[in-house]
Length: 504
Image (tube, rainbow, N blue to C red; front, side, top):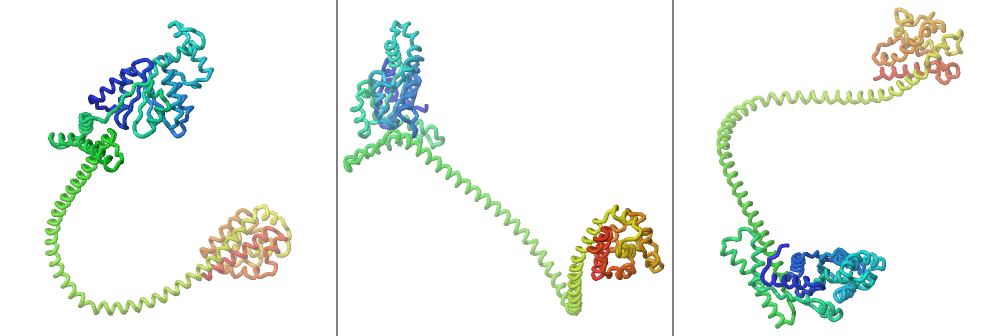
């Protein structure tokens, strides 16, 4: 603990120690808040070798909790034979029933209903051996009396009460053991010596208070100011009939406030000094930069004069060429108008081309879907037909015409046409269905060749009469032959795709 032991404080320590060293010795410390009652009680208990116990008040702390705390202290004092100092303050009296138990504790040590019967039996069993060794009886009443004697010998209550208000007088009248069974020690206001020593100790932690004379003046002023306030409080009571309390705690708060204000002011001064120092540094840096700018500006002015002379010469040359530029600008405007017309036409054609290309995509997808519907098994079955259903041969001939010049097995005339003698079912089987895999491969690559313009124009013109036939319809062909239906759909969509590409 951070204590300053002036003469009065040491006298209180001696009194408290002398009281609690006696068996059943209890002390009642009466004084205003902050006068050192609890601190000196803890020091006295430590000197006597006692364990200091104190209850912890909370919003849920009740009488049962208070009894539980008393039980722990009773067991320490009565069973473990330890010295216990029970420090109890008036601020901890949240329930006046606490004082009923305290009154019994101080008067006889026996608090009714503190222990249950089974706990009493356990305590009696625990103290039996010690009671025998000291010649006490071993019956239950004798053992319990021995336990209470040990408690009274080892448990010492230190009551810390404030005399301010009516509560202290009322409690002393209602619970006489608070006064009759304790030794009262009155804590008077701190004398000048105590105020001076406490103030000096607190101010010793503050570094750099100036010269020794300044420090001594501050140390002497603190108790002086406190004494002046006390005198003014008495005068205020005489004139206004109103109390103004100043306690040692007020003096400690005065010292803490002074320390805090001094620290704040020093911090503000340090910040101001730093701000001023930073400002001076910035001013010096600015002055250096101004000198550099002036030197640079002189050089820039000289360069500007040279550039101005050069610019005047260029201006004369520009004036001479202005007429030529204007004439060329007129020509450029005419060309720009022509380009704008061309650009508009190109944009229009590009839009049409994009529209046609968008229309071509579904046709390609339909053609590819038609090819996917054809498999080798269906084509192989067509190869075995001696005479196909009506219209199926026309579908295969149309496919033959489109593949002319693409599939090597299909012979053509010099003009690139399929010969009339080969436009038959037997010709189709021989030229296309003899190798079904190769036939499908040429069908799959046909779209790419058509897009690249590798297909003869004669193929597109020769196939159109077949496409115009009434029975040249995928739905009609599907009822006759699935392979013919797929080729019919493919031929129709691939020719439409070619027409769209030609329009683009």
